Image (cartoon, rainbow, N blue to C red; front, side, top):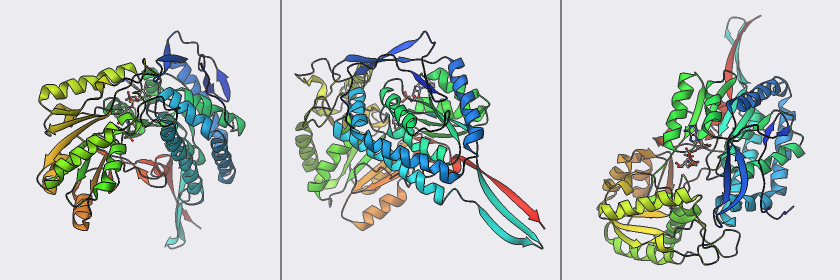
Length: 489
Ligand code: NAD
């Protein structure tokens, strides 16, 4: 069913214990359409009391939900999948409206969210099972059963307002847990709409709850004794805080954090394939992806050609409102985000990098107030520069020259981050060496954005990740504990 996106969503509500609840908070924030600089909703910043109430209801729901046979819990996931398919287009349009990414990118996000539900369905038949061994000693049998733990807090970033919550929700609930989700206060509207999916499939009340806000809700997740664990996806600064807090209060945590991803182009790469891939890797989602490429390392003689073709192709990208036809790139998510990225461009110029393409002056005539910033490409960047080291999270590419693959790998491994790295080459030797020697969680070989499918784990390394178990499929271990039973008969 396709509904037109609304002009204004008004005051967003919480979803607690199966009810839409108006917040009693006195603190509200504006939610924007970044292409138009228009306020399209108000988001409540929940008080700790409100977050506590949601957790309490989630705990009560857990006691009943865990008792349902897994085959029954599973049916809800099937229904959620089909409802998400039904609202696929509407939800994609809401994501575009609130986040700014193109409708094509938003549809991709929705597809990934649905794949997570499908993967969680498969878990129920396979990984949820325990282990058993008869006769470990005379007349003694030993087994391991997996049990759900209780309430989990799910904290999500602005850039994938549907996909990231769904990295965790379906896995947590199919295994018998309940959740309180805190969407990003910048892009909360899509999750607000997803609530109708839970309502329409009649998911038992309190199994999934949604509370809006920011730090106070997260602090309540960390300190509330009923919360068993927290998943966090967002910046490294906040991620570190969440991980430390989880440790202090003795909770489980999956923390997926910031990134500075490298793409290496070897002289033997097929440039006809490389150029479209890297344009999309650097400028897709306006560079606001944790897997977005940030540093382009070109090895050897192909440097000038790659540079020229990359600039030419990037110059062609059409900026605009993501709901309009033929738009390749949307705005940045907020005016603050744009200011921050422009600040990095100024810093790069100050550091002596050469601007080959400057997105600062771009004008989108139909949307003059939007937070647009065109593709920006720096040349003559060195690995020591701030623009090569820090996460910019916008459409800015830094081209770095390397003499050899070894030098390129050293640069990648010298970064504080380790989310993803890609190589373009036709050499099996280079590809294998890259795969083995690069210290990053996701490796792309002739793939610009190395995004794992939902039935694989997703995590980074170094300051891109804190914890042991990664997201998606790995979270089966996160959302269950194993109990060992030893029996003598
Ligand atoms: P952010 O860290 O600002 O916010 C993430 C979440 O933390 C939000 O829900 C926010 O409300 C909350 N938060 C903000 N400040 C807080 C505080 N002081 N205490 C507690 N909670 C707080 O991140 P963002 O700007 O929304 O998202 C962009 C970041 O997310 C980038 O760094 C990007 O690389 C990262 N990201 C990582 C992955 C991954 O899988 N590694 C995926 C997507 C995004």
